[in-house]
Length: 345
Image (tube, rainbow, N blue to C red; front, top):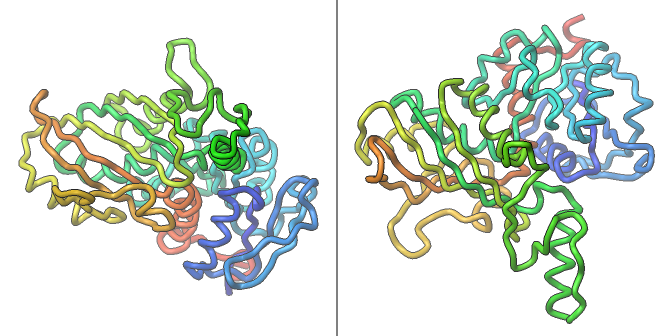
């Protein structure tokens, strides 16, 4: 017997990817319900190659009897409906920023801190981290276990899909407009994104950081280790899918380059693609549609003691969002006793 699963925000980029991944990985489902706003009610949406679902209204949906809720409807919507679902006994895996820093709610990347799911029934809500944080902590976890990380400095190069369908449409329309001499003014982004880079993701904070940069700091500390110091600079780039990061790491312990390769090559969820030749590294175009976190350009940083650099690339819609959420559900079922309500009864 499978789980009854509700996907909230099913018509968005992440919601659609969740449905695809549930089907691809053959997650055991008895029923899948697609939920969105009332404006989307009645729309048809594919469930991988398994069929078509008709969208229902999230605000009218009764979560009683639903085992798992995979949420990506936006933080303000999750704030209302995730607690409602949790109170009905549904385990909510929320992809928005709403619950990430709540001390009572686990913030989970299964390869990194799956043990945090142990007491998931305490709140029935689990938070999915920010996309840029997920791929970085997957890369950092095995290194931290062996060498103890002191400090991380990261510069991100984040694709427009991280800003949703509107971001992808804006890049497409502006690029097309430039070629046909029909310039399109920015709407989703603060400046033109086509043929440009924008050092600004999310809102500015009083200290000059953007909220995206703050998220990378506090989420890394919550997931991995509160003692790790993190400095982040987040940049939007004209790429449709796939986030890239140049990560500088300083350790407490000395190491060799061979140590780094061995640690990363043996880690779960990581592919090391690092040949010191033209094209011997991963890029967003290469990895779009794939699940692992790819690591390239591994090298010693001689400007600081026990330091190194690496290039980290991942599909932000998959591992950075939808895949991680489904992996949390898989981990709950495999390791922490989550069973379908009908079977448990």
